[in-house]
Each structure stands twice: as C-alpha cells, then as structure tokens.
Image (cartoon, rainbow, N blue to C red):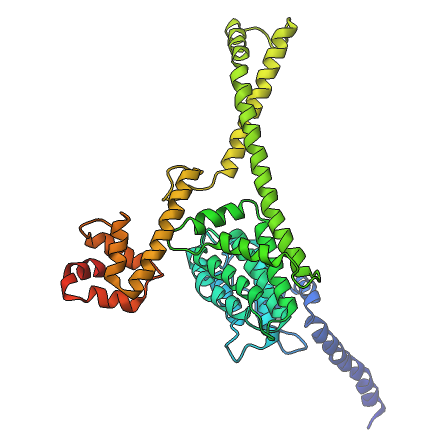
Length: 429
C-alpha cells in the first residue's frame, strides 16, 4: 500500500468512528422521561420525528402512550357510575361466603369502606344507598358471626359509621343490628368469647352517646306498631347486666352502667333545657314594657348614641333579648326532629305516646290470636275498636300486609276462604 493512501485512510477513520460513539449515549439519554423536554427543545426545528410522538417503555416493561387530548378541552370527571362500581367492588370484598375472598382481603375491604364512610355520606345517591341497604348490611351482619376478632371489630366500626350518618334510611337494618348485638351479649356459648361481648357493649355505648339517639329509638321503634321495643328491651338487658351477680366486677358491667348513665345524662340535659325555656318565656312576658319603650325610641328616630342611661339600658337589653330569641329558635330547629306520620306535632305529647303503646299491646295480642285462629284475632281487634265493625276489607287487607308478626300460612288460609272473596281481591290489590 502506498504511503499517501495509508495516511489518507488514517485521517478518515477517526471521523467515521466518532458519530458511532455519539449515537449510543444519546439514544439511552433520550429514553429517560426527564430529558424528553430538553430533547424536544433541541430537535424542535428539525425535520425528524419528535420524541413525544413515540411511546415510552420503562425498565419494567410498562408502556406509556401519549395523551390524545385536544388543546382547549377540559378533563371530565369519572362520575357516579365509576363511584358505584368502585363501591360495589369494595362491598364484594367483604362477602364472607365468597371462597375467593381471603381473610386479608375482607379486612382490607372493611378498612377501605371505613375510610370512604368517614370522608363522605352516600345517602343522597339512591344507587349507592341501594348497595348499602342490601349487600353491605347483609355481609356485615354475617361477619358479626365470625370468631375472628379483627374482622369482628372492623365490622362494628363500619356499622357505627353507617348508623351514625344514615340511620334515617336504614330503619330495618338498625333494628336487626341492635337485635344482633343483644343476642351476642346474652348468648351463653363457648364460641362467643368474652372480648366479643365487650366489643358489642362498647358499640351500644357509642350509639347511645349520639345526641338524641335514645329519643329516636323510643319514638321510631317502641312507639311503632310493627317494630320491636328496642329501648325497653335494651334497657332491661343493660340493667340486668350492670349488676355483678357472681361478685366479680368485669368490664361488661361497667360498660352497661355507662350506657345507662348516658341515658340519664341526656334526660337531665333535656329537663334543664325545658326549664331554661320556661324561664325565657317568663322573662319575655316581663320585658314587654321595655319593648314598647324601644318602639317609641325608633319612632322618635333618635341617634344611636343615647342621651339617657335608661334608654340605653332598655335598647341594649332589647338587643340581648332579640339575640337570645334567635338563639333559642335556632336551638329548637336543631333539636326538633322530623314529624312522624302517627303524631299530631313534632314533639309528641305524653298522652299520645301512652295511647300508641296501649294500641301496640292490643295489636300484638290480636296477632298472636290470629296466628292460632284468624277469625278469633279479627274479632278481638274489632272488640277493641282497632278494626271496623262490620269488617272493612281494605282495612283488614292493609293490616294483613303491613303486620310482620302474622304467620304467612295463616294469612293464606284466611284470604283463600270462599267466604272472603272480597277480602282476597282487596289483599291482591
């Protein structure tokens, strides 16, 4: 090889190797997401394809594609269907009879539901409320039968959040829940350990600490014709359980006593509030002349700075009285519950409650007679003027449909009698 050709080849080789060495590091750097913006700024005016138009694959093999959103458009939230599907999935994790749900999965589902209920209330959405009424409450009551303390305590926590915020929509579920807690406390079984009874009593104490919960319990269940006497039965249970028969004092005795003391504290607070209202009404009658002085002052159009000390005292006292009046009205709006359909006013009178309780006892007695002999039960209620005489088919059909204490077999035999064809038509309608 001639010397000149060798030198020419030696000068060309470094120039050809440099581009190859520079290409490999730039390719690896450009694949890092943090360098994408710098690379695009450098190659912005180039004719080659932009890196943003390419998909990025991380070291684990996950591919990230570019967003196809147009400029000027806003992001649309997922909406209620997505929330409902997520809630349905979380509820499905708590199903104890699903063989795919392990104990860890059920506990995780209960914890996520606890967080969701602590952050928001789903009672305003009928689709979400339907899932809670049917599936969630059914799974929670089934989990209360399990011997695992972690699942048992997590289920009690979710139940408390449900009935604290949404008991207005869960009347039947709350009744079943309290009956279940009473069953756990009273049952004598080796499977029901002491810690479970203690947690059940703590759950009752937490419910009774909710403002006006005991009053709601008595009005909505004890004074309802077709519901159990929850307040009466629970008070008897706590009174019996608060006394240590064996002589040894346990935590369950203290919790029962605490629940009873919670009721007495609420009664005392309401009595004090009633006394304060009576004092306020008396002061309002006494302060009527001061109100007339204030009207004279307003008609005279005096300036705000009073010249007479008596006038200043009168107007200032009147302002304080107006403020007290507004505060009392706000307090009464917060205390007064919604008017039940069976009461004549928002806060039922004692006579109305006594009449309802007596009528409820007669209805229970008539239901027991009906389950033995239907005609005898109907006659008893007619004698007590609870059913019309002669028999009103629509009234009896309504009683047969709404009363859950009646035996379905006896209802079928009674309405299928040939003498009660008109009653059968009313019952079917």
